[in-house]
Length: 377
Image (cartoon, rainbow, N blue to C red):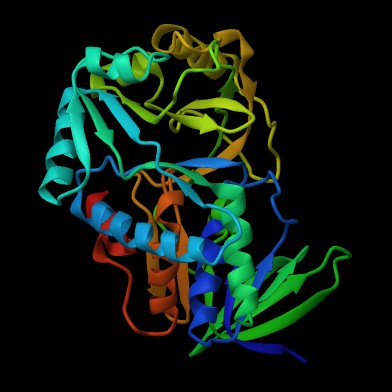
């Protein structure tokens, strides 16, 4: 006999847990299924830190950031440890990108400034700068591992069921309901019925929804940022972006991002350069080309870091061709996928969007729905 709930969430990463939090606080019955243990390293949500990065020029991302920031602060007020540290974020590189973000943020009254390279170097002696440098003061770092725990604790406090060690093997949407087949570690299966299901399964989304929802192309890659040791413990570090013009990206490999991570050094990675993988068959090792490109960027742009001390970490990106997220409702299913390496900071607001979709309050913003991806493509 099938179990029953109002909302079934498939995937217990940052997006699934944020959605469970939003639904449970509204009094909805929520059952979340996650195949791995807490803080596992098989997906995209693990690790200590992420950038809280508002260096966008598109209004829909900035709207999402502002909402997410307020929700982060609300969750943080209920949590035993801070979830954010606003030590600032610097963006340099392609001048058109830097100035477009500055213009958009200034128009919204955001706390930002433009510095010349000398002023930036005087403030952050461990980095090298060229061209205008955008400083966002309402930005910095998010403590990702803490956030996973905080979302889960808040959701459970409001009655959500979080089930780990079980894997969804089939999704059967019917008129007005969803039947989901779940297998435990021994392979024993059971069925859960829900009025609605949210699929926030990261790298496993395309496989789970094959033949059910016609998603945009989702490319799963294995990415390998690394932590580097500072040469001088007195150096102060911001979070950072280094954006390259389109004609430089092939040479550089990818745009660069990073942030200080307490106890681990300064994290630095190339954005979306990893090799395509099956999420169940990963190597957990960078290619020599990516490893060399990361080291070379540190050697050129970070005199305050030792480029020979990199300690690699591994995570997955699930990316759309445009880098925009996929947020949409199709019948009794809502899908959240394709966060393309920049979704973390928006998680509380995305949880709200998905909860609104699941309860019929509103569809996700048009920019992220499947039709928009088709139009762009």
